[in-house]
Image 1 (cartoon, chains in turn blue, brown):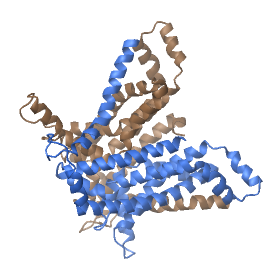
Image 2 (spheres, each protein chain N blue to C red):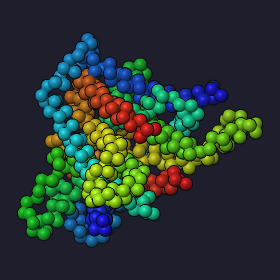
Image 3 (tube, rainbow over the protein chains, first blue to last red):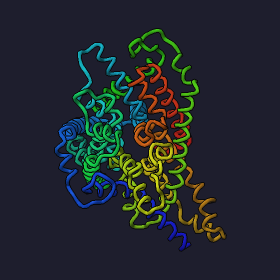
Image 4 (cartoon, rainbow over the protein chains, first blue to last red):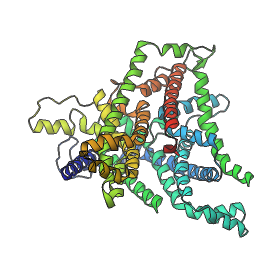
Length: 255
Length: 276
């Protein structure tokens, strides 16, 4: 039994290396002086190059705006939805939310594209930031609902009843009793929605217009041509940024 | 009371109806229409797009998608089970070890796929290292094949397998293991005859959670397969961009949706409690 335990530990170590090493190596080589895969000394060169690349910076700015607006919208809509569903279930709405979670991204993307093109027959609009923001809001809601409803289920329903008994109206009870209790869950959901939105390539690339290129779209375009140390630098920044957001979100979700 | 609840649900209803369900209905309608002269769609209504799916070229792509997703799922199960077992037996440090499994999953999927391009390409770290060590002379063709796609998918979706496995292992009554040992079962026998059967719901959940995204994968086969290992997702994307055959692209999308929903239905019917 003891030896099996050791074997399992060694296996787990290997598995963790498999999970983490690729990103660590990528991050390490973003500090490499050379553009080749041979270590030639420490350098911040690629970070400077990334920050000076106007296309990358413009795309990062677009991504930030899109992710921020979509996060705010989906967090508000998703939280209200989770609260409504917690009060009384609605199998059709819950079902379509779950369906939106499991629908392959490519299908979500092309169906949105087809939908937009159909709408544009009647309206004089084109693909752009607004279509991306709407798409991101739509696919983030389900994530928010799942996290917030989990938080609501751990809450004592009698708290709200007490507030109502003491003369609060329903909105006041939600605003002053329930919302403060579930707030950590709401913030965790927002952080998650932000990362999901910021990272999305498949749906975004289909519904983006000429002036709404996002960071993942630029990275993707470069990556398809091969490996580029500037992308290593940007990737390292994304990993660190996302990692801290998620750690924060996990901490909030479990408090 | 009821009216306020309606207001809470109204925004999400609006968004889901207009930006999720309506688009699916449109795709459904498009799949029965004919391709327009300049792309787009036009009447008459027809089943032609679905009939074209029976073409051997497309059947081969469907078959490859199932095959790649299947292999990736099996590998995730084989690699994920011992890892979940390890986490569930880690006592106080359980949460830390579990977070270490989940953490890479939440760092950009695109970046993680790119990391494998960085490692596997001809002048990548693996080939460079092997050449320096004198083990190989010419770089091995590690990137742009089915193997690289499977590797990328396993790497990407392993956490989806470990989480449900861990959840069932966690609930396993340790007395059962002791009982098995007391009755003379060796560790291996206990594992295969007691632990694995009791984990069946977790295995089913993990399998479905990994298989569905793998089947619809687009990014991984495109970047790591390099156009040589096209899967359903890439076929759909191509119909909507280069090929400009929206009805056919819609028909494939709908077929994929039906497969995904059928898989989910069989799963939900068996393990209702696992989802709720």
